[in-house]
Image 1: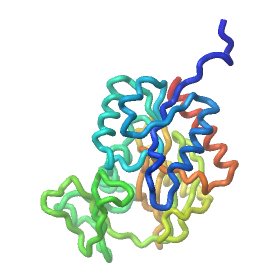
Image 2: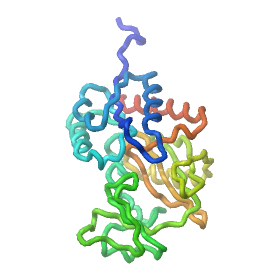
Image 3: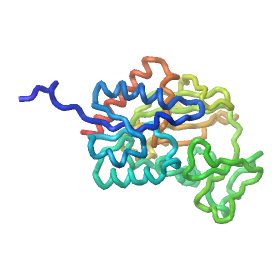
Image 4: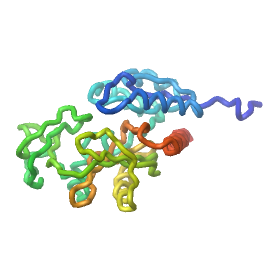
Length: 278
């Protein structure tokens, strides 16, 4: 008879790009820390996102973390998703999210539905729906890390770009704030008090109204298991508007939170991955 302590531990393929250089963030440091802690509960191996499709069959679960913008390896990512679906692989985050995981169409959909988001359109015929502003932002629907983003004086879309690009007014805001969830459980919040320094983050104590705002988007999302980051901006009038619902590989800024908060997050993540395997 095998004792419980001798039973094999679940194996995890941890997908990350340790060499990716992100502005204002240390992807490699965060994932080195996370893998060191996940090893307390799982057998862990690391791989680059380009190798994930070929390796996933050998593991009980695949954890996708700081793998960089998918657009840099779109073909490999599509192959990974298809292989995971065919094999029934358990992927964390699960591949059923409706936020950034599926592109930024959700910003258009939420804007049309009247959610508190930065007004967003993706068709030339809808440009007149945007409020007047000092300037506008045009960016790819499948973009990330500001790749392909440009600023315009008027709301505009190039001919033939309907459905591929997003147009939003430039919003004056007091600061940006991010809310971090494991599953539907709120973990912590961070804010960037200086608008021109997005990743210089400080701990933030959310109000009940702030959490209601963030939870509205977490509840709207269709993600079954995983980590979500709700990014918002505080308007001069005091309200919050959604900037992004990151449910693919959200950077967690764990180096910016107190140790006890970091420990609580890691414990909850370990439990969440075990829930995926149950």
